[in-house]
Amino acid sequence: MKYKTKNVLSLILGLVALQAAAQSISPGHTWNDTNGSSINAHGGCVVYADGYYYWFGEQRSTNKSDGISCYRSPNLYSWTKLSRAVTPTGTQTDENRDIASGRTLERPKVIYNAKTGKWVMWIHWENGNDYGQAKVAVCTADKPEGPYKLSDVFRPNGCDSRDQTLFLDSDGQAYHIYSTNMNSNTNCERLSDDFLTPTEGYAVQLKGRRYEAAAIFKVGELYWGVFSGCTGWDPNPGRFMWTYDLMNETWQAPADFRASDGSTGINFCVDNGKNNSYQSQSNYVFPVPGRDKCFIYMGDRWNSSNIQSSKHIWLPLSVRSGYPTVRWYDSWDLSVFDEMYRMKRMKEPVDGAEVYLLEKYSNRLVSRPKASLTLENDGNSNTCFILHKTDKPYVYKIENKEMGLYMESVYETTRWQAPADRESQEWRLWLEEDGYYRIENVADGACLSVSGNTTEAGTTIYLSAANTSVHQSFGLYFDSQVHADYEEADMFSKAYRIRNREQMQEEALVVSVKNVKGDTSDAQVYEMGTGRKAERHRLSRGTYVKVRNGHARKFVVK
Ligand code: GAL
Image 1 (spheres, rainbow, N blue to C red):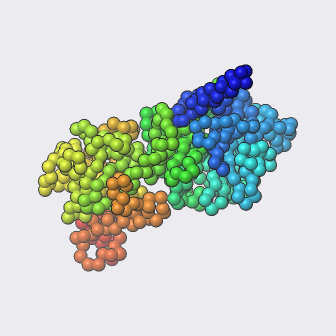
Image 2 (image 1 turned 60 degrees about the vertical axis):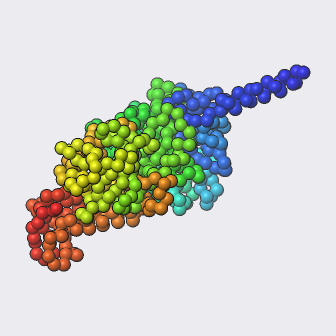
Image 3 (image 1 turned 45 degrees about the vertical axis):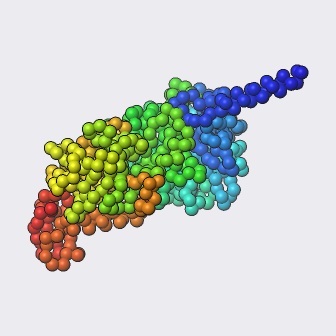
């Protein structure tokens, strides 16, 4: 009888535990492990191996560093604490080449080396008194969960290395990316074949930007970095940059954008709370295995008076817009990824195409739920538009599918009218290098534009003069479940941008030189007065230009 009761009890307990097992992620709330203790893994990363996810992080005892913890999960929601991946061991040495108790170990990053069959962890290492050493500790293990043994503690390529991360490329090459030069710059260096040391030489990137908390990921041929600014434990606006080549090219932001706080770069957060990255600092971007272009932004909501209790901010990260965006969710699960890429970027505008207009920096669609246009999430009403080609190059009429009415600029506000033969119903699509368009009215030059800094759902879209806002770029998207036949742009390839650039130059020439007699195929267009080559910047209507193909001529861009 006694035995039976025990059995029933453990069954009930088991069921309760099953029911309590997390099925979702609630950023900012206490996240308990399967033992009911809050997860003590900060500044870390997640790796996937043989059906399990492993979450590594700074284990803290209140504020003190207490090695590197490791948790395992079959589903990314419920985590079981394993033995510590790195246990402080040995005694502190004057050479500072130890991981003895009392040392500060931060931002552990783990990658697998297929050549040596070892798991390799790089950690930001400090002596425990201050942040003056700025070194890395490199450890290795035979199994993902460890135990990890110290290989060495050093300054990579002799440089100070504070916030740091690793990136393992698809070709097996690994990189170490770290804030350096007292956090002014970000260095990138290739790792040796065994991933235990950097190879000689490094690229100095993001000069003077003072970024830290780097998390690197790749889509197609593009490498992305999300970063924070440098405000210690306090959060600040998130930033992203991209490059085609981690070692040889300067990182770029989509626009040379200066925020109101003076920092440069574009924020990857797009909802209320974006000004402090939803009170978080990035630590890693995890590519969800088996789901194309689906990422999890992992951040820390640091509590500087008790780092151990800092909360975890995990949110889905999308690159649908061609750029990383992170929306806020009170609670979410992996199903948010199911329809993340249902809307796809069109290769080019086509007469009669049913399109959705996606605003560049919010990853939200233009909609007309009320009298005015607003940015809205997918699934909102009045988001589908039909493009009608006119006989003018790059000029379209834009019909709202649901209403059957045409967009018109009337006194520089959008109105919806029956189709008419009026220039105020004609819209010039000005291609940008990243495949977006500025949508400019032919009659008055007014452009679709999000004013201000807000990019939340419900934000109003106005008409305003060209280049008066960074939010004047709209991508043409299509519903792939309705139009599987439409052609998708390969927007993460290097060739995509090169082609767009070429087309922009051709457009400028077509628009500019159409009145010039003679062979203009190799004409160079210069702006009058400035002498600048026209290809380097967009010519807008009314600009006076001259063509240099032997003889200079003057004419007006129509
Ligand atoms: C931050 C850094 C954290 C931690 C902290 C200490 O800038 O991102 O990982 O080092 O400083 O103040």
